[in-house]
Amino acid sequence: MRQLAGSRFWNAPNTITVARIFVVPVVMALLAYESFVTCWVAAFLYVAASISDIVDGYLARKYNLVSIIGAFLDPLADKLLVIGALVMLVPLGRMPAWMAAVLIMRDVTITALRGIAASEGLIISASKWGKYKTTFLDVSLCFLIAHYPVNAVDLHTVGMMLMWPAVVLSVWSGAHYLYQFFIAASSVEGHQKTS
Image 1 (cartoon, rainbow, N blue to C red):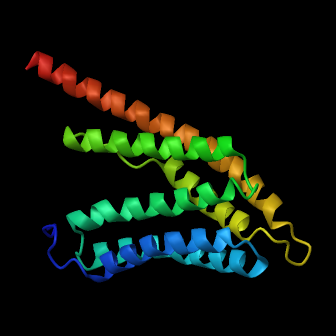
Image 2 (tube, rainbow, N blue to C red):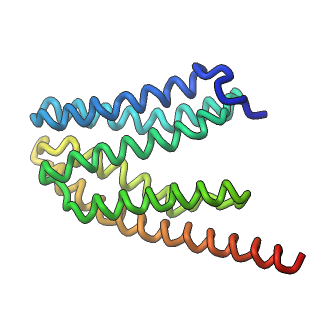
């Protein structure tokens, strides 16, 4: 049973989610003061925040702490973390602006799509391609944030190699969500016309 908004807001999952949101400006500030140390601290915080997304979801499901506010904040925290990193990496010259634009536009589009679907009572199941995209993107961003070579390993090159499949999967999964939405919407409209 879902908790009402505002009911026991400060449970463990929501607290972790809010902490993840507060990490976003810290990561951005650390990248603004670009150095080996600040970039590695930012990368560590990014990884910790990404892992916390798995933890808060697990706790919410295991202890029946799923709430309306949590359902809103959790994806918001994820989007803010990724967009914050992308926005900072472009002026630092660590990734092309067009890549960041594609990733951000895809997320904005799918978020809006899910909002419309939810308002109409449509269920759009999570795509495995979206999960693959998230994995490649998070790992790629971690390397691009750390940036500086370690033991002759060019972290930037590794990050960009992983970013390409992340972008491809982002576009592919976005197209898959759009297809699912239009199929579901067409089905509902067809049912309404015949009823």
